[in-house]
Length: 128
Image (cartoon, rainbow, N blue to C red; front, side, top):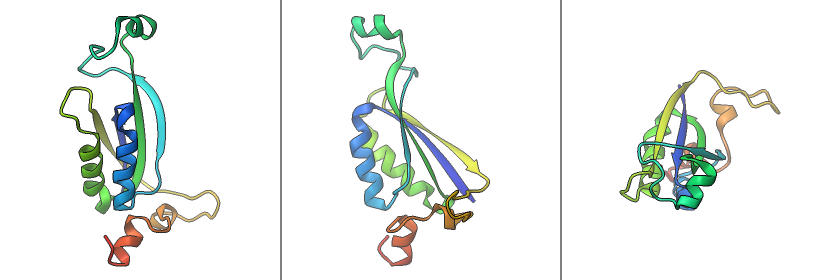
């Protein structure tokens, strides 16, 4: 079975999160600039910023589709890299994914999900 991770993190954490994911072999992902609000509101921003944008704060959303057996190492890498210990560090949602189809080749399932030197290739080569 496959999973989708939707991680919402601070903008400034993106570089460290990407490095942490690359270190474990997570290659494919989508990154979106978003605005949102969680429990912490907008206390970390100036009144000028709050006036212009209301209480919606800039965040980054990462979408990653992966094999279920890679889920926990990926969650650990994201949380370790994104955690500051203060409110607003982010949140991770996990969804089931029924199937994957690579448009160019028609490959399905894990074949459609694989990349050279990804986490599964490293595991197969004994480097994970």
